[in-house]
Length: 344
Image (cartoon, rainbow, N blue to C red; front, side, top):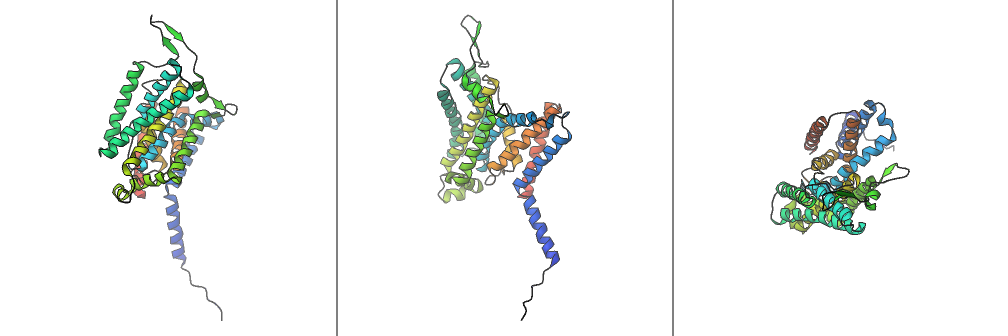
């Protein structure tokens, strides 16, 4: 006897292949990669008189996007829990001022100054987390209040002035002190000037976030809270503690960004970080992490950082005004949210 092969339906095979292709294209990572490819294509077309073809342009694009990327690492953790943190820009400014005071004015050792600043940032985030989880206040309201409070505290600590190497004497004159070594170290470049230390710090933050979200138990807890908070609570997830951890981590990463910002500017500016929360949210959303919580990841945030970083650089080398850049960023955020809704 000879075995007979089952008949196949060509139309069904084509339909199944089309369905698989649509699922692949609609995946957040595929969408983000496509967006990044389109941005790079724009750079090839509008190269700014050939500036886009030089390695220095790509190096500087990653360096400039690194602070936003560090903030976005913390924002990703919070958004996965279906929250939001509007205070990251103000916490960045507060830490930049504190780091400059500790290092320039008071002459603290680098380890002590860094540890104190990280503690300040984590404390600001943890306060937001406790108010959100314990008292059931909307994250938008809590972090908006923290944004105003941290900005005011930064201005109070700085006395309304930038904390720089120009130190005012009691008689009103100024004397200049050396830039602290930690500032020069963070703002330096390695491998013959081809890799920025700030970019390496950003990649380290990405790695830490990825390990926490993908390999540790509390990462699964955060996804569960974002998916269905009540179901997570009934399943034994310590919701209040995990929300506090999420916002505390967001404040911690904002502190890291503040240290990098102060080192790059060689001063602590209480006005630093204005609008940075918008860029951090844009990075996370454009990368593909769902604003409703429960879905997303740090790999998508890395792609979002590259998209925003290259887009900013391409607009910069083509002398596009800042107002147009802001409007374009807002439009991209709306488009990304609409794509998420369609995917959902």
